[in-house]
Image (cartoon, rainbow, N blue to C red; front, top):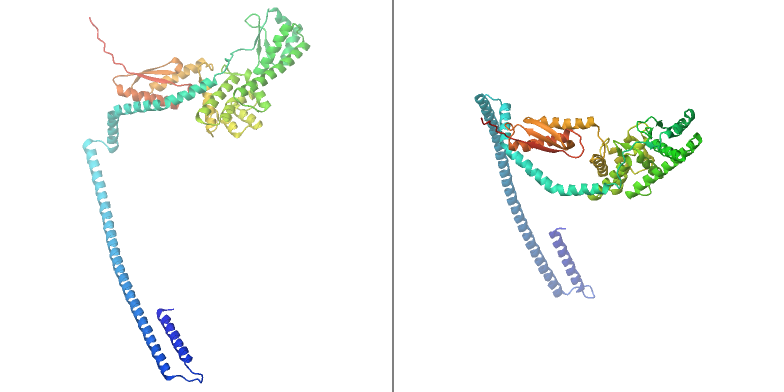
Amino acid sequence: MTFFDDQNKKHDDKQAKVVVSVGANRDDRGSYHGGDARSIIQDARDEAFKIKKAAEEEARKIRQESLEIEKRIAQKEESLDSKIFQVSKLEEQIDSARKALAKKEQELAKVRNDLIEKLAKASSFTAQEAKKLLLENLEEELKSEISKRIKESEEKIKAEAAAKSKEIIVNAMVSGATDWVAEYTVSTVKLESDDLKGRIIGKEGRNIRAFELATGVDVELDSDIAGEVRLSSFDPVRREVARRALEDLVKDARIQPTRIEQLVEKAKHDVAGDMSEAGKKAANELGLYNLPQEALDTLGRLKFRYSYGQNQLIASLETGKIAKKIAQEIGANEITCATGGLFHDIGKTEMDKEGTHVQLGVQLAKKWEFPQQIVDCIAQHHEDEPFSSIESIIVHVADAVSGARPGARHEAVEDYIKRLTDIENVATSFPGVDKAYAIQAGREVRVIVQPDIIDDDGIIKLAHDVRQKLESQLNYPGQITVTVIRETRAVDIAK
C-alpha cells in the first residue's frame, strides 16, 4: 500500500465518522436539526482539507528525497565512469611499458651476444673455454677461502656433535661389554698317555667306529701333538657332544660300544641343557622375558658356533646390549632393539638348510611369531632390504660396532693386505700426491704431497677430498685418519 492509498483510506474513515456523527443527531422522528448538520459538515470539510494538505506535503518531501537520491546516484555513476577510464588508461600504459621492456630485453640480449662474439674473437677463446678458464682462476683464488671454510665447518661440527656422539657410543660400548672373553678353541681332548689311543680304537677298530657313528664326527688319532685327540665336524654342537663324551669315556676307562652309546646320550642331554640355559641367561641379561622356549633353545646353539674366531652367542649378546643402550639414548623402542640385536644372527644355527643366514633367521622369527618390527631388524641388519624403522638402523649399527671393535674377529692376511692397498690407492689417485702409506692396521693413512704442486691451503682441501673418497668407495671397520704432509727441503753440499 502506497502513501497516497494510506491517506485516502484515512480520509474515507473520517467521512464515515462524520456520517455516523450526523446520523447520531437525528431525532426520534428521523429528521436532522439544521444547525448541527451544517456544523458537522463544515468540520468534516476542514478535517478533509487538513488531511489533503498533509498528504500533499508528505508527497512533496518524498519527491524531494527521490530527486536527491537520483542526484547522488548520478554523481556516483560519473565518478565510477571516471575511475574506469583511469584504470583503462593505466592498463594501456602498463601494456605499453611491457612491450617496451620486452623490446629492451631483446636489444640487451643482442648486445650481449655481440659482445660475447667480439670477446671470443679478440681473446681467441670460445664461451665454454672462457668459462672454464674463469672457473679455474676463481677456484685458485678461492682455494684459501675454501680450506678456511672447510676447517671452520669441521670444527663447528666437531664442537656440536663430538660430545654427544662420544657419550652415546661410549655408553653403548660400556653397556655392551660382556662378562667373559670369547674362547678361540678347537675341539680337542687331552689324554694322559698315548696308550689310551689304542683303547679308543678298540679291537679291529670297533670302538672308534661306534663313537663316530654315535656322534657324527671324525676322530683323528694321528695328531702331531702327543696325548691329544682331534674331533672334526662342521657342526659345532656335534663336536661339543663328542668332546664331552670322549672325556667321560677316558675318565671311565670302560671303553666299549655299549658304554659309548650311553655316554654320548648323556653328553647330548647335558649339551642341550647347557644351550637352553645359555639362551635363557643371554635373554635375561637384556631384560627379555617370556620368550618362546624353542627360541631360547635355538639361541643357545650359538654358544658353540664361531665366525671369524668370534663366539656367536657372545657377539649376539654384545650386539643386543649396544642396540638397547643406543635406543635408550635416542628414545627408540628398547625391547625391539634388544630382541633384534640378540636374534639378528639366529639363522646361523640353520646353515645346513638352503638360504642365507638372514633368510633363515627371518623364517625362524616368523615361526616363533615375533612382532614384525623384530623380523624387520633381522631381515635388514645386513641391508638386504631397505631400512623400515629407526630400530632396524640401530641393530645394523650395533652389529657393525660389535664386529668392528679391535680383537673381535680374526682377519685373513690376504684381506688385510688388500684393505691397506685399497686405502693407499685411493690416496694416490689425486693429482699432486707423491706417496701414501696406510699405517696402524689401516686406521690411518699418511699422504705425502709434492710441495711445488699443492700449497699449504691445498693440503686441507686434499685431506677433505681423500676422506670423502674413502667413505664412498671402501668398506672398513672403525675410522681412518687422513694425514696430509707437505714438506719443502733445501739441500746444499759444503766442500
